[in-house]
Image (cartoon, rainbow, N blue to C red; front, side, top):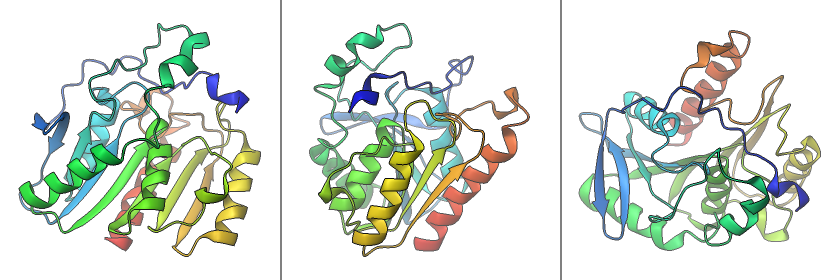
Length: 244
């Protein structure tokens, strides 16, 4: 689609120094950031945006999910390949994306699921993804019956017939003023899901927000946005609790 090459303005700003509360581990062929509560049979796979698994904002979300009682794991779904950088030339974005398709992750998902079950004792597993990871979350919700719940946060909508028969209950969060995802795509998504999906779903658009608003680490940068950020995060937690 023509809009795929537009910038993905996830707000990384001055959050780079954030260290995280978990640890990095090696799981078969991929690295991952893992943060665990004291004891939990519930786990969430947190899927990165284009800026990669080490982005502090995404690890912050993993820490937040762990604080709510979930083992949270943020794997490197790029498998060692270079993440996108704000300094890169956007005209090369499609070339960069060629070997990092968010729908080409089954091998890594299977490895992570096996780790969560065998090493972390997880019996109920969900998925949360942002931007690139939002698309990946949508894909996983179509493929994996065992995933109890998904939250796709501003994932670019692809219009294909096989994109709408969800196997897992999925919450879709979008921003009203998203330069990457036009609202007519969101409307099409909701219409097609109503026609095709046998699993529960919800599509929610947050007014006056832009791409990347949910996983900004320092939400008080813009006080006007703070209530929407907090509401979206609460919606995410409540959706996971409902189905897990």
